[in-house]
Image 1 (tube, rainbow, N blue to C red):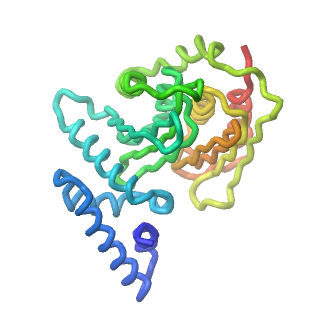
Image 2 (cartoon, one colour):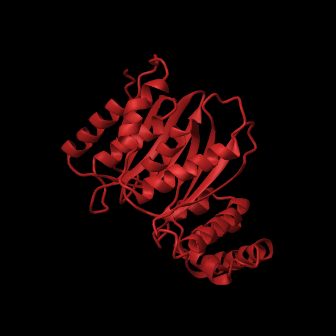
Image 3 (tube, rainbow, N blue to C red):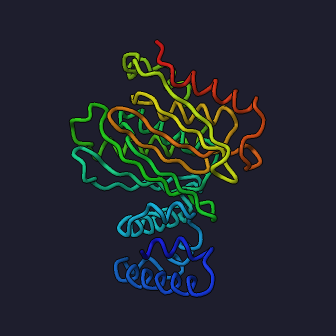
Length: 285
């Protein structure tokens, strides 16, 4: 109820707004008791004001605490004169599912950020089973991933997560090299061709300011990177995304916008993206 109130506060009026405000203040009071002293009241206020509505629809109270700690870590990291302002801050925790780790990424938003993150996971043979992408009004990205080793049976090591973080740091601070590296090595990771044909649909009606791309495809290591890189190569931006895996099927919904931050207009733009995605989803040697 409290998280819903935080989401509804911006649009509520009259008695409803008063109720939402009281619920928000109760949530804030609980957070201040749970959070370490290093997290200031101002940081909490900025978080409540900046995060988009779909964040409050999905976030749990525990993840809210984790997110605030992660953002604090990011801001502290880039405050150091020895650290690039483009650096990411990555934290992780054990998930409830066996052999699964939850990873949280915080950094400034930029073009192809999500594709680079997916590439870093793939490069160390970590498979993304679920992801939620959130971008605040302050341009801070707070992305959450659930990952396993490629075999799905062994525990994810701390070393592998550190290697992924190192690769991502390099990708965000240096000229991108993932495309060429992945092109040379992807045949090692591709599964056998699936009997399930990929499904790609576009929805320009549900959202007022973005085009929804719905994708159903056989899951494999590196699939998400191939999808996201195709979107980046088309010159499009990702506003939000919901990535899920069920029964070895990737079920992805990605909100994209053009260079002006608007939904895709014109049949040619959508057809071009469709062709890129079909190529990305097609397994070939």
